[in-house]
Length: 531
Image (spheres, rainbow, N blue to C red):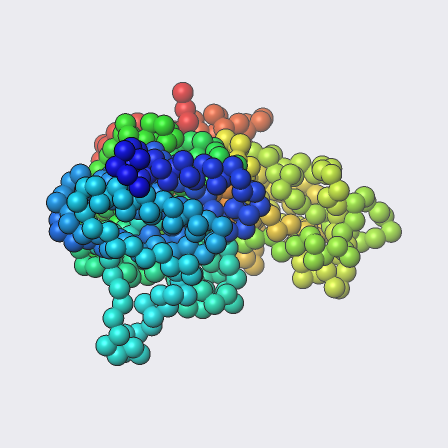
């Protein structure tokens, strides 16, 4: 390859190769392999996050795809420091990609030669987790065997769930709870493979920030590294458009060294990524490393930032008020023998409540939707699936990507039904009092809170997907009990409780009172959703 043939940057060459590959490859193949290719603008932004070093450097790119991230990182590093030699290791398991990756790496090598920089590159056509399993084992098991560690690790890892019985999940057992996602294993392993002054730069879904399934991962990951930078995108539907997916992603830079502050930048999408607004937070404001959950809060604006502070001032959870949250016990496809579409007086039936029965502050039954059954037979065999007809708050476990609110719930009152039992389908969470019953004021108050702009805004700071897990709801702190009752008493007077009316009541009851109690801090500090 002659000098005049090397007329574009390696990252630009990789992007061109990637577009050709993506256009020739089916969405099914890419989905099966968890392939969502990084655009040139995002790759160059990620590369620019790296801090400068000089002399000889080592880079790891696990799940490298076509190598665009490595190219972008190298381009930026050699701008910032005097680099003589680069050791680059990459991992990729898809043979269809690897032949194109080799083409990119050949171009990169020639480009660096023209810069007077030596490149030693190894492309491992094997699984990253399996190949580095010894990093998870106690060092005593391997004696003096060394583990390769790196100055920089950069990645857009594959995204897909694996079973707990998968070999990779067993190897990375310390990171796993429930059904793991492969990207978290890539992050956790990479954190172990950094040198003490090393940096890790990843673009991933933000789902690891909260929830029970990622709690083991967060504990292990934050024990290894400390987040220095976070970039978030406000517009989820503009990311990875070429791959026909909707991902709510973040970019993080983490270091082995402990960071007292975190730089948080926000852009609408990748087009304005280089003009992103940057805020600096004390690390403890976004993550309490002493807590069991180690939830990572990621506020995208001042309203979200203020909501975090409001909830930090509250000390109690629903459990402290003898109130619990569970997931509906009826899994429809496992209960088909008990499900009935229409009411039949000859059968002992109970209403079956689905996602579509729950609107904001409104419970609607019966409500036909497609082939979904409206009733469940009450029998000795199905009894364990049913709940007594008590007062509940019903919350959707899933929201659509187009929903304005992540939290959608409705009050349910036993007095509105003549049935003795209820079936609650698995796509709903329900709030209840064990061995007792919620009062009407409690039902109205808690329903209003979870439907409010304040709660929805706060929830979005740590939940980056459309799922609303019971474990995440349990972790939310609640206002003083007498405030819950006051809100309930005010909301139940409304003929039709709407978001704006609820927000006004909550601001008047909660926010103003809270800051009066806290010695005159501004009552406008966290007003949410009221014009």
